[in-house]
Length: 424
Image (cartoon, rainbow, N blue to C red; front, top):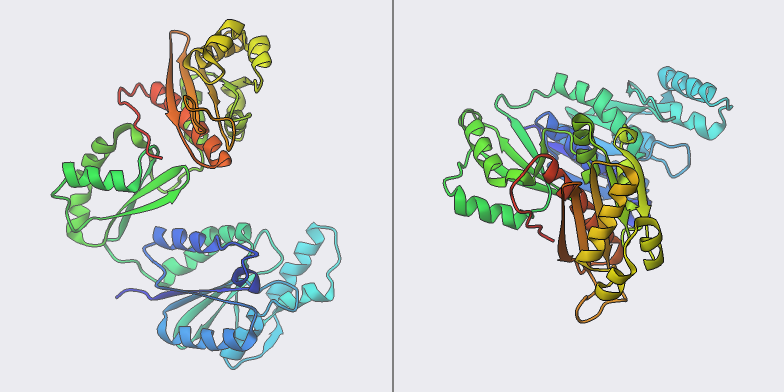
């Protein structure tokens, strides 16, 4: 029998748009990993009566209710109080929560004040859920045979608690379906509609027992294959192999742990191959280098990059001939190849990326409209260049150019012969 799960998000800041809800994603991801899913989500501001009424109603229709937010030290943090009201109970000083606060204060060499102590008063008979990073513990209570779990609204604290504490509780109480499996593929350079069209054309007999789902997180797309029956489990290996062959080099990795940039996937590959990379950037202004150096261990594969925004610096730092810039312009195949060649010569790296484009919103011409970009990539024996027109907002343009550039090197490193046909 399916476990009915509800999520109640609290806080007026969510209602008026001051804070963007990212915590729902954290809940959904962790629940999916253990075979559970959210059936209903409700957001309510800091209104005591509304919150208590909603908690009571949700407890009558749910097996599991998460309440997120409202555990802080201020007067508008109402969760403990409204849960006590819904349970027809009272707040009392919880010794474990109090000790947690004292330890938290000692680590920070500070003294607990009265607002902080408010966080130690919880509904009677609450069970504490540890929070190793913040001042507010989580807690759980039972109401109408529903397990209510209350968590802090700070995303970093919630993420730790879900992984380290809450999933253990849930696995003990809520047994996932026997045949529940979720397999993830992390993709780049292809969109949902293109994937669906490929499946329709090349895998028309796709089995109903394997459900296809997507989660887009620019620039990475996650493809999810879900099964919840014995036949689906039996069929999954065969059809997983088929779809992996179909998607080819668009697949960055598979498994539960996705990453946020193409650099997250490229840097480990360069480390394994004992290869180094350099970059020569114009329109991206150092974004590619920044993404590379944000990865732990990047110093083993990245020693230098060049941000040459002006034509003068392209010539001075990278040796781009003045005649090339005059005859072909900064945004040209000839210029980015010269930039890439100069970066390789200066740095001694094994691979290179060079980009030059018109990020906009101004600067375009009839021949080179806004969004035009030339990307060069390769090694000492083979530098290639390709033109794209990516007519989007300036910041998005820069991120797309960075992602495609890194992906072109990734494809070269894995010796893929597939042509990259990027969806916007």
